[in-house]
Image (cartoon, rainbow, N blue to C red; front, top):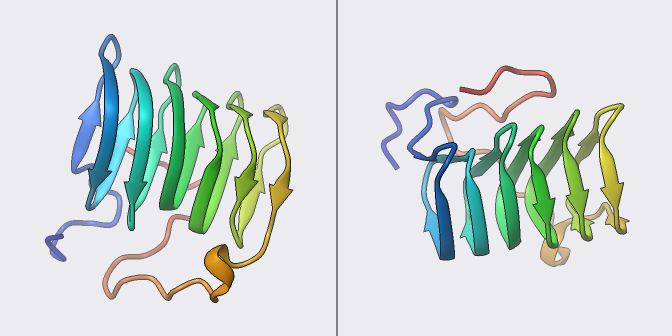
Amino acid sequence: MDSSLPATEITALLGRGTQFEGKLAFEGRVRIDGIFKGEIKSDDTLVIGEGAEVHAEVDVATVIVRGGQVHGNIRAKHALEIHAPGKVIGNIHSPSVFIDRGVEFQGSCRMDPVDGKPAPAPKPGVAPPRAGQPIA
């Protein structure tokens, strides 16, 4: 990943009105505002935008649900944020979890290091997102 990109820079977008089915692997920050079905893996950040519908097993470093829906299990190595009016139907596992008032969550929550190892430090020059921080 190009370290000159700002921490909030979106490197890929699946926009509103789009549908994709399959396996998604990426570097950088990816935002989904459309419909995605399948599997998502990355060592970076996934943003689920308002109106998005994700039916997937998610295994990434950081997940930010900004009002969309996720149906499936989420493993976030660093952090997971779910902002209202977000909806998560599935189990979540992350060492750091933020759930906003007004969120719908159905599943179990496990808060300990993923894979039994302490969460890795953020990459140099990339600030981790903070709760309430605006995301593009």
